[in-house]
Length: 176
Image (cartoon, rainbow, N blue to C red; front, side):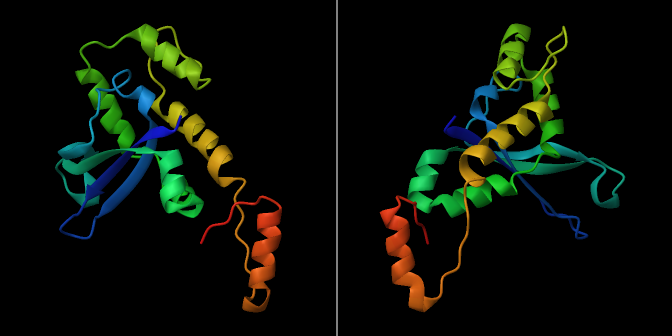
């Protein structure tokens, strides 16, 4: 579970109805409950419905990036990774998933059920994907692994060297 999809939705309206949404989603779902997504930019890919008071359909852009959480932790630090996980939200991306499921030509009920069991999601007899259930379990697991054991402490300049030595002596990971 170290590689994940980072799905970023961006919409900039003329009248201030802007939307930015970032969602982390398990890479295992790609190609099973929605079409296989490749890293890149998808122009006007996400339907927002009648957004910002308009009476016509609005579409947002989608940027897909695959990241390795362990590499992110090593290269950018636990704080950056923690912020990324905590920033993740599930909103308009669900409509995107539902539309992409309809476009998925080789949809397999068995694979959908297997994927959902992997995340302890109960399925109905038709194997309809529970997009939000998978997200909720996935983010809960990520938070347990990367953010719940994370504490931020403040140390005065006079005590800084002593605090660093004490933490290092006790094998506590430090970051700046």
